[in-house]
Image 1 (cartoon, rainbow, N blue to C red):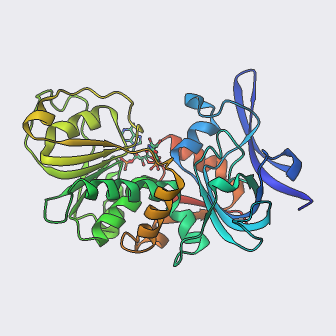
Image 2 (image 1 turned 135 degrees about the horizontal axis):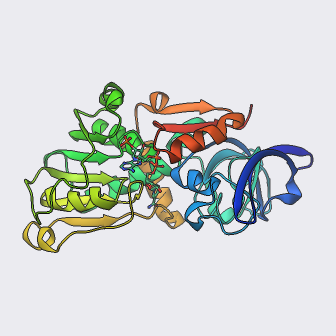
Image 3 (image 1 turned 90 degrees about the vertical axis):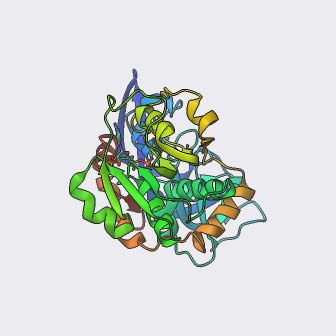
Length: 329
Ligand SMILES: NC(=O)c1ccc[n+]([C@@H]2O[C@H](COP(=O)([O-])OP(=O)(O)OC[C@H]3O[C@@H](n4cnc5c(N)ncnc54)[C@H](OP(=O)(O)O)[C@@H]3O)[C@@H](O)[C@H]2O)c1
């Protein structure tokens, strides 16, 4: 593959991170044995952090952002893939340790590449992306720990975010009763349309310091962390299950052992950077029994020229649903 193509690249000069759309050649991409013509990428919260050089998520510069992508293989030096294969790459360091999906081409390690799950289009899989994978992995681990639709309501925090919107969609189509917690009261109709039966506002840091409060939720999918996660530990039903993967609101966790020993609550940590066998299992579920049914309403499709603006909105918590970048335009 030869020629010049567009890439959204981050630079750090004297500690100041800048980003711009550049024309580059394949030689300047991180090394790899599979070359993919990117069809779609997306914005995940980590991309927003990377784009401002925050939390040390990027340590080597310059770097093309984009922690997920879908596209078509154009060249492969690995027997598992051939030109024309429709594939996806989620995480595995792309967009942070290795050049990522915010470019017309990506060059990656074959071990990170997955064939597109049957029944999903390249656009579907990009709309789902790392965010939807995280929602699917959370649901799978919660169900393995006993969650079922008869147990009671499930709370999804950071509800208008990427992971949460797909989680609401997945949970509700699977028969769960979902309550959405959001800081955006004007998005109530949107969240109800995705399947939330109720929408509540964010809790405040002063809400309560009692070790246990009224037991409300059978499950919780938490994007927020911090005092929201602390509060969740105190309001779960007996044997309630929390999937904790996010820190959009803070990284601290201030709680006691009381909810664990008196209510038997379970706090499950979620790391979306799973081994390939787990990825294949979860993606198969996402394409079938967990399949989201509102992907069109969740996706906002933009061109690369609007990427910087939407990264800033995401960092400010002002984004909604999944921002998908169409790299073919
Ligand atoms: N562990 C993993 O492997 C993994 C994988 C994927 C994502 N994550 C993490 O999960 C979180 C969500 O990711 P995402 O891509 O869905 O992000 P996102 O699209 O930016 O959504 C985050 C949502 O959290 C809420 N929020 C933002 N700032 C907040 C604050 N200060 N206090 C309370 N709520 C706040 C907002 O929803 P409302 O306005 O509706 O409240 C926002 O839409 C991030 O922390 C991300 O890093 C972790």
